[in-house]
Image (cartoon, rainbow, N blue to C red; front, side, top):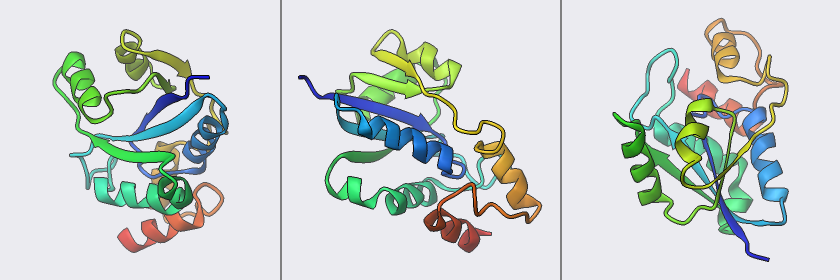
Amino acid sequence: MHMKKAIFIGRFQPLHKGHCHAIKDILQREDIGHLYIIIGSTGKEGTVDNPYSFDTRKDMLKKVFKEQIDKKKISVLGLNDCSSDNEWIINLKSIAPDFDIAFTRNDWTRKCLESVCIVEKQKYYDEKHLNGTYIRERIKNRKDIDDLVYEEVLGTINNKN
């Protein structure tokens, strides 16, 4: 069987259990040999929607998925926003040139990728609570997020706030 290389793209503002469930589901597939986790909007940080830097988000992923990264099952890469869809695809293929399949829930991402690979819609895990907007709002209001993110991520968030 041909082992596919997959991509999973997100802003991870912050990395939460919904992202982690999706990544674990992808890694459990027998046809996936490698997963590129692409951190989007790498140049944006310090805003309401993008509070964490690329390095902080990469650190969150490295802490939670250390074993898979060490075994070379996962690569964590960054991708800047672009002025056009075509430029975005070109930049994506320059950092992850050999992916076969993408997993996303984002309509814009799906539209961009449909011409270059197979795109599968990633299922949601508790859409109401496991989403970045909800979690960022809870952080801003100093409400508990222990059940929404892993301990490794919570430590990073607490060190940045």
